Length: 193
Image (cartoon, helix red, strand yellow):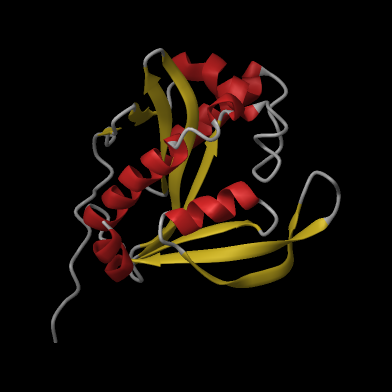
């Protein structure tokens, strides 16, 4: 019986990725002001997590994400514009199931950068990394069904909507919302890439 290809990514040195306009870097304390600006914005965090109230929240967040990398459970990149140099968001690969060769992907982008194609640019490079270096067969996006920005982005990247989980997400408005589940397979990525 043929063995499946093994992941070549080993959580050693942090993988720095580059796109036309972005450097995808390790989260570091020196980025605290930029990350705080993104993570404290209630509109950016509407479908993500509780907005940060203080820079201490952001320092803790950075430390937690760095620890997850050390524990080999997640990779999160800071999205740094080259000109002018500024961190404008993040992309993460998490819930990596090595045996089944699948993971989830998450992202956030500063509001003043919406509509410029930066999220798609960054995600395209992270997807290439995930399929080529992590040897994933499937990548998933779970998002609030009414988050049209995220739904359209998933579709532009070639993800297929696999279904909806009813009333799965409790949002800041105190209501439960439906969760749209999208999947992208290696075979589909090879065709689209």
